[in-house]
Amino acid sequence: MSTTHVGLVAFQTILGKEIRRFARIWMQTILPPAITMSLYLVIFGNLIGTRVGEMGGYPYMDFIAPGVIMMAVITSSYSNVVSSFFGARYQRFIEEMLISPTPHAVILLGYVGGGVARGLAVGLVVTTVATLLADLKVHNLLVTVLVVFLTSVLFSLAGFINAIYAKNFDDIAIVPTFVLTPLIYLGGVFYSIALLPDPWQTLSRFNPILYMVNGFRYGILGVSDIPVFGALAAIAVFVVGLFVFSLRLLNRGVGIRT
Image 1: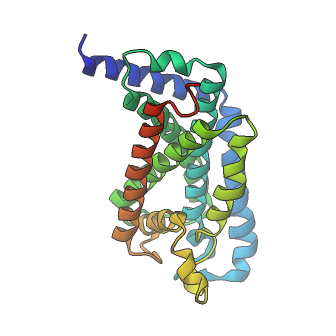
Image 2: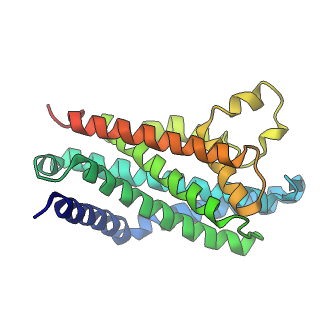
């Protein structure tokens, strides 16, 4: 059996396991984030949005809807990989995978693929709800698909790194609580950074989530605080950097080999 065939079978096996894992408990993995994001749309879009009026030339509900969808994709992709891979470390069956003929890159891609699948599934549900509340029309399909896919990959990789360094179940909650959540709320989901005075507007540009939210907003509405090609380039650079770093950690057995 060729190495390519072994890698393909391994990838399909890991990916299938990851998809079945979150699909089997969809009431915990898909439904809660969909409900949470729907509440964001209702509370911020309907109740507060009527007082805010327009933003970026669009009704406030339409303006925040792309950002809320991205919130769902980011948190779901991240949480799926961090919980699944840490569980594999905790139960120590990841060691069996590492000593098998499966290339480490295939193992990484399998877990990332599972995170992407869950992120896109939750994003699709939230998008369906958002279309019922807001007037969303895809401005650029290619940009929309690229941004949501790359973002899901990026935060799946981030979840993988968190799972490698985590020493207990409490550690996998530290990054989402103290890093991910502030970055999301300060990433232009609910406002345009054009409203911010300097130096806050300049500082906001160091927030990677700003590029993802604005890139997706451009794909849906055609407006963005960031040049769209710059946003795509920034996301792609982050994806490549985190993939290389994740693979290096896996090859070195960080957090796995003792």
